[in-house]
Length: 202
Image: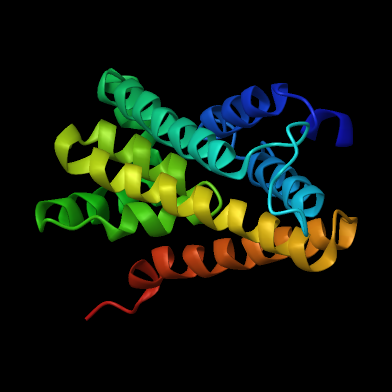
């Protein structure tokens, strides 16, 4: 991993991982972002600048956020044009149906905090993007919240790696602590996303 984080290819690897994890949530995009940020922070600590053989923090964050938004839009457009087969698949999934209904209500009321929260939950990004597209929600209602979600997730992930590297150095402990913090945020987001659906009716 050290050779990769010291190569310009790290940006392409991070971008592709973040772009495609909307379809394959098991891709370790968050771990890649954290590892790259940890290496950059540890290499630049005490020097006032980051050497050119490690990722640039701002460029890494921009790369991750942009890929996140593009992935959301690709999933959104595919679901928009998915036709009856996708509609039937969503109808068979309780999670997708529930997310579609809740997202529609949130966007109709002029708010999309659910989009931001779901970005941190495991597979939450996939469910929300596909649900918005399948329900034919207007892109102008969905896109701003997708951008905010991408920036928030990228900033949080890069921040975890950066400050972990500053405090603990470029060690597996720093990466492990940062990944654990990202996982805890995901668990909290999943709880918030599911909570209204799990509330007793009436």
